[in-house]
Length: 141
Image (cartoon, helix red, strand yellow):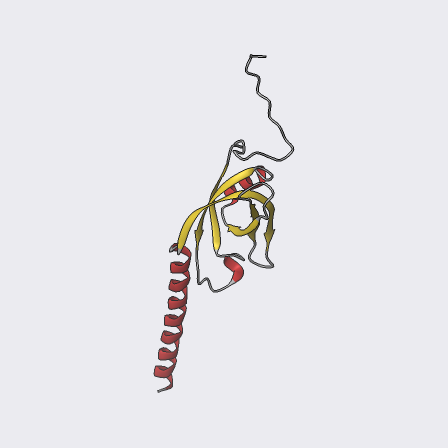
C-alpha cells in the first residue's frame, strides 16, 4: 500500500513539474505582441542576483521639446546587447516581442524582449523652430 502511494505521489509530482515546464516554454516561445519602438537608449545594464539579464530604458520622443515616454525592455541575446551598447546616444529603432505570464523575474524585469536594434538616420524637422532662421541663397539679389 505504501509503495503504491509513493509511486502515485512521485507520478503526480512529475506531472506538476512537467506542466510547469511546459507553461514556461509556451510563455517564452509564444509572443503576445510584437512591434517596433524608436527613441534614445538612456540606460542599459546587466542586472540580477542569480539570473543576469540585460535591462534597458529608452526615451521615446515624438517631437523636439516634448516630454519623453519611457520604454523599459529586456535583452537576452549577447550580440544584440553589444549592438545596443555601440549605438547608445543615437536615435534607434528596436524590434521587440511582448511575453506575458512569465512566472519569475529570472527571465527579465520587463515583458518586452528586444530582438534587434538599428540606427535611424537623423532627418531634419519639418516644423519651424522659434528663433532659428534658415537662409537659403537663391542666387538673386
